Length: 181
Length: 252
Image 1 (tube, each protein chain N blue to C red):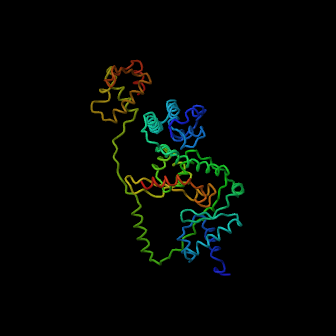
Image 2 (image 1 turned 90 degrees about the vertical axis):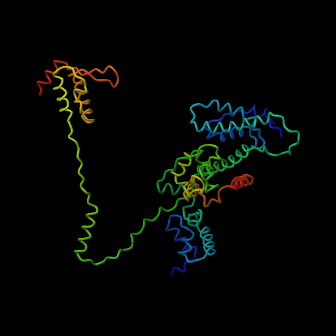
Image 3 (image 1 turned 180 degrees about the horizontal axis):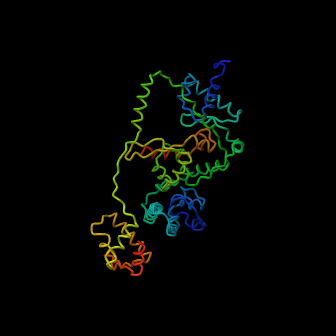
């Protein structure tokens, strides 16, 4: 058997398995020696094969990662002897929801939506590894912009941000309006 | 749409709001208690309840009060506008109140719905676990170059010179022990009461002053001397207590 007797999806799966960490798309393209279209097909194929292995393919802002299927959480937690993490506060969950949809987003933008100081909630989320600084807004003061982490998807059993419920269309419109302003 | 369309129904609402996280949250809960969509509800009617709640708050962080005040001010503005006579032109039916606060509430409500969904997911506990990352492999073997022992020795010396700490000399003025200072004070007290200044010496520096003061406290505690200072920061007068002074002198 040679490397090429495994199809692209299998080789992709092997790379993601051994990495554990999320892998950048560009890195996958380089190591697999394929183009975007082929990678896209391989990702779709791997995604289909995952349930058979008790796994899920997680996609987060151009990175890919293999993790255990969310429905197997109890089995895994018993096996690894893990405790359930403490519940997040309502404030933290609201802040997390805003970051998930509006990323990259500054603290001021979050507070404009929540109408209340959100620094403590944001700190909690950063400490829990659910949210991280992803850049700075090129305006006065260069405020930090925040985005969700792959850990966020894992913690809530999401394969990608697309699995979050859609915002009502009129809300999406308004948010877009306010962005344009 | 008249702004005060449903005051009666609102007044019937039992308002029980606890543990809210911010003015918009409170406002939205007031609205939701009445089971009306945000767009149909007259915020004017909630204003009194909101203001009452604001008034009942005490011991709340200043920033939070400021946030509440902003929302309260907007509500009051809304109410004032509703009380003023309106221009006669008919308004298009079914239009939502063109107010920023209503917009903001709707946006906030949408995100709160998402937060609720996240809470459900959190409760179901369906977490995905990734593999802990593999420990990095040992680095590739570095090339070994053959070198003369003399070259290695020179390199070792150079390295040694770099890391060796340079000795530094620190000159400290002689330290007067508390004991010595106490003795000095006692010997000067043989002639009777003295001021603290006279006891430590007119030319005493800070260190001597500090040691002298500590020694004085020590002597006071032992009951060897008594001290008086009529005014704060004023002169301290130290009076020996004869019997003790003799004993102390005998000790020496």
